[in-house]
Amino acid sequence: MAKRKYFPAERLRDLRELIRRADRNYGSTIAYKQFGPKRVVEEYTFGDLNNDMNAFGTQLINMGLKDAHIALLGESRYEWVISYLSVLNGVGVGVPLDKELLAPDLSMLINKSECTAIICTAAYAKITEEILETSPQVKAVIVMDPRNARTELPESFYSLQELIERGKALVAEGDTSYIDAYIDINKMTEIVFTSGTTGANKGVMLSHNNLVSVVYSCMRLIRPGGMSVSVLPIHHTYECSCHILGSIYCGNTVCFNDSLKRVMPNIAFFQPKFSIMVPMFPEAMYRAIKKQTQQSKLEHHIAYGIKASNILRKFGIDRRRYFFKPIHDKFGGNLEQIVCGGAPLRRDLIEFFDNIGINLINGYGITECAPLVSAHISFDVHKKKFGSVGHVVPGCTVRISNKDSDGIGDIEVKGDNVMLGYYKDEAATKASFTEDGWFITGDRGHLDRDGYLYLSGREKNLIILPNGKNVHPEELEEIITSKLSYVEEVVVFAHTDEKGEQSQICAAFYIDPQWFAEKNIADSKAFMREEIHKINDLLPRYKQIADVYVVTSEFEKTTTKKIKRQLVEGRVINV
Image (tube, rainbow, N blue to C red):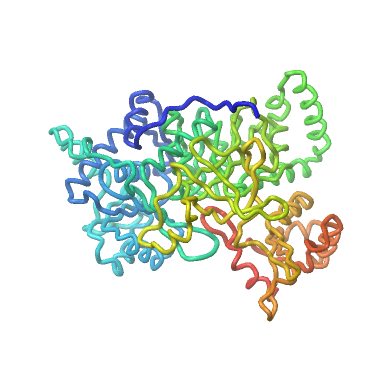
């Protein structure tokens, strides 16, 4: 096996050093763009980032919040980044929360993580008032963007901008309590609650060492260039650690998307070169391109263009961005690279984007690993391996335990990226590590001889049939979506009989009802049975799907766009 080549990168001590380095190297460069009032674009430099962080951190200490646990709640924006970095880099422990949760759930997490302060955006000021009724230990609420508030804020709430101005005055007077604060890189600095598709939320404890190790790993494998658009929830480690912190290292400009309903128009507006996404987004982009080419009767034109382009590429001539300019213009004209995590990407999806000139990179991570475990390298020296979620990142080791006859087993991880444990949950922490100290991811897969990781599915999703055969539903779902391009969402599961055995494999589909109407299909379930019958012919008997269900609206998802699988069977049995 040839020695692997990586991008050069500097391993930093902590996140404060990350911000100071960005200020030195890119001080006057635009770090963030976002929509302000009346959708006027606001811009902030890396110098602003460092100065505002130091000022806000100084004021938080002045308010008596040193070593406090502080909740962060709201939509993605510059002020969220300032709040997050200020807390982690010398004040206390940051607790990013999912803005989609209801007040009782937010209050439960705030109490569970022992937060005594909340920093929220104006849109969440009202729900914060509800939270205070059941979280009496919270002594301070700071609103990130009061100028955007639609309603008058309570007098007891602080304005982040006013606190930053007070902090700047303190720094000017010589207050270095924050700037000189010692950072223990191995101590908990962040609590991130898992938002998995099953089970109770657990508080993942992360340190500076965890977070900077992920930044280092990102920069060794993936080097984004220029401007990017942030579309994922910022409270999640994938977006925050890989995109936000990684962009600070590179000096890239991050543009915040302000609504999932405006993702495509905002991408066209900001004209990014790069983005981090989950598979749902490129799949939606792919379907939109396919639909438009069908409506314009350009399928054969696109197919011919791809064939001609790929012939030229064999001779070192790359004309993809010229041949497929109308497609690129839909994405702003500059989009070159998308890094995808959350689930393996289909081969046909990767190949299509590669054919038109967009590098679609697959990676794998888990919150407990802060989150990065593997990713494909974003230059052409090492070609992507289709079906793989990339090479295990530097500084991280993966082993496969309890292998079955096919070599598939439990994915276990060791490295600086692995969490400290679950907050105040010794039992869950102990259960998540092997006796010799490896973190048990709960995912199954295998490694090839070159260190590339392949996922088979979640252990908790594994279907175990009465004959002892194991079926990974994700494998069947990938086959279905690759063969049936009109399928927008599919979940494969097994009914459990009265003996508690999983005996019948089923598939539940969400397909746009308009598609059935356009094809003049009256009985959608009968149609899908026929389609699955054809797919069953390609499968071993024990993997064949016995029954199908069709729903008329999307499946319920987490904020990271993972389907809540445990809810699917209960929803479809009455369909």
